[in-house]
Length: 180
Image 1 (cartoon, rainbow, N blue to C red):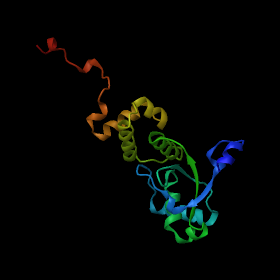
Image 2 (image 1 turned 180 degrees about the horizontal axis):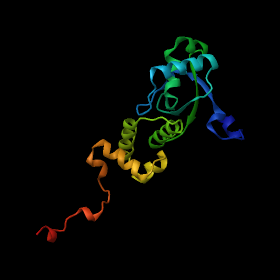
Image 3 (image 1 turned 120 degrees about the vertical axis):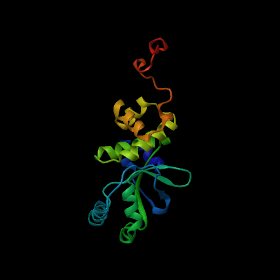
Image 4 (image 1 turned 135 degrees about the vertical axis):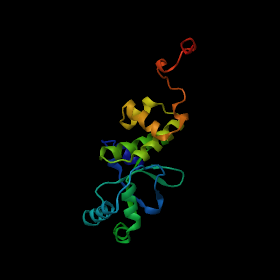
């Protein structure tokens, strides 16, 4: 694969799909997306009838590949025995090389581009990214949110720590002389 990467004229992850053992792929622990049972059945039917038409996007972790996008495609490949048999226990993956903040941002971009994401899950991602050192501007830029949306998600969290270091309007501060 490394040799192919060196000579391939198109350097996009889709150029390097690999079929890896399903046991070597693990779900991430931050995906805010959820799929209702009817849609999960439809995804199963889609893969059964059409095969995998999109790879699972992963990153290399210590001993496994961790899902960045394709959480539910990963589940179908593992939970439905007929699908697992048809792929010989393997999953189609492409691999990104990104640190955790960028992985999380990629997951959100993929989810949002499809038009579905969970507000509570997004709140958790914002909290995590702040804990990893990203500021509001970075979060907004990388997750496709404006400043107000980032602020609302921080407010939903109810955690005062998220607002540490943020400048607020002085109009909310009473001058000691005005209190008299």
